[in-house]
Length: 225
Ligand code: CDP
Image (cartoon, rainbow, N blue to C red):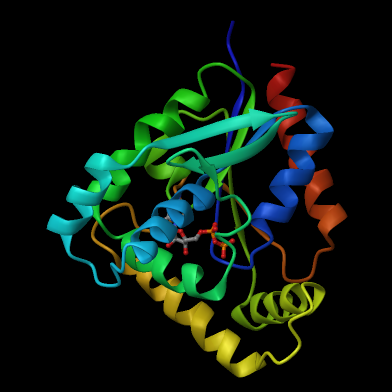
């Protein structure tokens, strides 16, 4: 059986995970969150006091790491050495260090097979930075989501407030987003880019529902081919 795969790439705060999750739910696809995988590995490195990009140490930690991705009711769970870390990886510290460790060739190599295999046995919608360019270059639908940096920072501040974190400084959040964009776009390996075959959706002026609708339309068109 041929499964449909949808690749969604874009920078932090572009609406990727919220929108991708909703599209997955509406279509009954598995939502594959590759950022969570990079975050989980980073979480493990930080727990082992690794806070610098030292490829030798990265390789050593990866060699003993037990990494699993599970789907329960189409929801993804990431396990490190048997522990479900899906919630613990959402801190500002993990966000900051994830872009650093995502530059490591060993880390990317470690995750790519897991990511590709997930697309072989289910209809999936996968989000990240290099999905259309590296992980699934033959994805049936490729979407690049973006938004202005000001709007993305505004959304991140709202996210924090919803989590009960109210002492966040908009300018600081904006600078952090810019720093992550820079790291993601300028790394040597698998940088964040829009491939020519991806459809660009700028979400700055769109509501979540509008973007979800647009994506579902694009995917349904492919399903019916
Ligand atoms: O939700 P947000 O966009 O803030 O982050 P995420 O999707 O959870 O990804 C966290 C970080 O992981 C990104 O800033 C990238 O540095 C890295 N990442 C990557 O390099 N490649 C991917 N396919 C996914 C994430």
